[in-house]
Image (cartoon, rainbow, N blue to C red; front, top):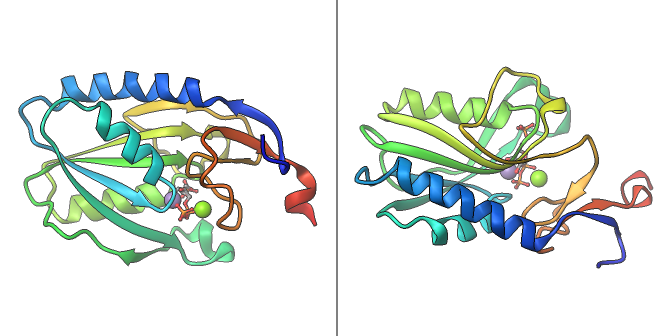
Length: 179
Ligand code: PRP
Ligand code: MN
Ligand code: MG
């Protein structure tokens, strides 16, 4: 375990098992529909890679990079598109892949954008959910784990861009983010 990590909250093995369960459900849901599976960079990159390997029906992939407009404006829900999709979503069954839903602002922005572009359907799969952080009424269609109100990192989740590469989800030692 890395030195900055207080404890492992969700192990690599638990994540693998959960991702497989989600992949099984999604394979059933999207059989014969050729969905466009969208990864929300950067956080979702590891979940995306592991999840699509467990989906057994034909899909297409695309990637978006978004960021909030800075910490102070996060609650305004203004999300900046760093990299847009490469392909049109009109008439497509779209599945958004997120690592975590906290306030819900990033996703509510993305869902509205996809609706405006006339996606046929828009569903959300998130590996982690922090319901206590929610400021907008939003729920994923598929959720892996509910997280407590702790500062967690790993498996794509960062603190100041670090720790994304940890293969598990861990609680960060308080002295790391308070100093
Ligand atoms: C994180 C996370 C989600 C979003 C969730 O991304 O990956 O995309 O915040 O928070 P919300 O529900 O309050 O909007 P972040 O903006 O930190 O960018 P990153 O994925 O590059 O880390
Ligand atoms: Mn993100
Ligand atoms: Mg982040």
